[in-house]
Amino acid sequence: MSPLEKAQKQLQAGKWAAALKSAQIGLKKAQTDWRLNGIAGQSLLNLGKPKQAAIFLDRSRKSGPDDNEAHTLLAMALIRSDRLEDALLVLEKTPLTPRNELKTQLMIGHIAIAREDAAAVSVAAKRVEAINPDHPESLMLSANACSLNGLNEESAKFFEKAAETGALGLVPYHEAVRHYMRAAQTEASTRVLNAVLEIAPEDGETLLLAANDAAQNGQTDLALERYERLLQKVPAHAESLKSLAHTLTSEALLELEPRIDKALQRHKKRSSEAALLHFAKAEVFKRAHADDEAAAQSYARANEIEFEARQPFINNLQSEFDLLTSAPFDGPETSSSESIVTPVFVIGLPRSGTTLVEQILSAHSSVVPFGEQSAMRQAVKSVYENASYPSGETIKKEYLSRLPSTWSKTPFFVDKLPANYRFVRAIFAAFPNAKIIMADRNPVDTAWSSWRNAFPSEHMTYTFDQASMAEEFNFFRKYTQLWGQKFGDRILTLPYEGTVTDLEAATKTLAQYIGFDWEEAMTRPQDVQRAITTASVHQARQAVYQSSINLGDARAQELKDFIANLDPDLWPELDL
Image (cartoon, rainbow, N blue to C red; front, side, top):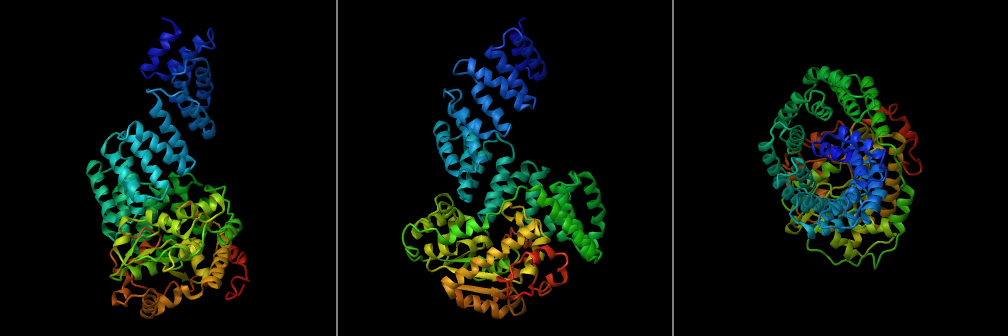
């Protein structure tokens, strides 16, 4: 039996190491044999050595026939080696045949996903759909195309279709749940979760999603039960332990403490899991032991690890500010027509009271909350790409196309993405009738609250470094000062401190500003039954309290780097 025949049989049998060895023996006498090079490359790829595999597969591609599978295998090896641009060049030159066309287009789509190139993903998705619209991976590609374009509801539906094929395991179920949550489709996310819980009731990722879903919907006991079930399977599961640390009573935290300590021993000292566990440990020190000094050390440790793990972190805040405030519009800034629906945007810094404002508004019978939507950023993405705003009418159309489909069925809806403070100019261009409420809170209190939380979004990386957080706060003040000069009382500034000390007065101010009749239910925001997906989920279930006012004053030492980097000209109310 020749080395080639032997290597082919071993490859078919899944004996990768043996196939590689046989191919290498054959290549000693026939270095350019495309089949032997292909077998060696495919074996190395299966053995988890993509960089070495790429060398052999490139030889096979160059010396073999055009329909040689080495083209797509080489692209796969390059992708796994993080050489996305090289992989794309290979795929673009791959001769398409009925056998490889679907795989080639799918890989082009996956590269586009990795590059977060929404337009390229959409093109690839359409090509794949034309070849086989019901292929599971085709459905997944379409789902990702929708996701990158901010169409979370449509994305979830594609993920559901992919899940129904049964060919991709639980992944599409999980993605459907996440996207339904982002689209504020609570009933749909719970429906999919219940379906997957029937299929795999003990799957770890499913239990985590189910626990988070229960917590977000105010089902605390069910959430605790699900976190505990997950911890029975994975005792060192950091996210579950952190969630329990924020939920349990101070007495129960004492029983949780040794479990956190044991989990810390299981994870690498500078991993994201360790950071979450230090956040959990800080809660134990703060609430169970009343040891503020030890809690501060744990918070500092957690933030340091998390910030380091997310490096490199680059904030181009000045260039973004210049772009968003001065880029020309494609047409008059107020060209958009009036809408029969009044959009209400709640903006501010993270942890400044935006969730409280949303809860108050959600208690009104005429209001539908949509949570934190990225739709406005998507609608003005041409500003970042071409340094030019589209017309107000175009922004309006693009924005509404990315909202949950129920937007047109209510007189008022709320978009509570704090970072929309950057897009006030675009909001008023698209919706002259828009209501914008800016949550305003003492910046030191806001920073302290952010410092105590672990935000998963990459856009929130700055909260793990005090100097970066101060820079973000400074630019927030620059934006809001400019919008105040330009739009005046079209924006309502709602101080957090005044809201929690006189809730009834604050709710009446909101009702008058927005233009609906005040309802007494607005003074009981904790009773609103809806999913809360932000870091405020635990506080939002409690009656409004005043204990979080001036918390930062007692934490000046722990926030010294933050305070030192605040611009005194922008924050004259502070004694800097």
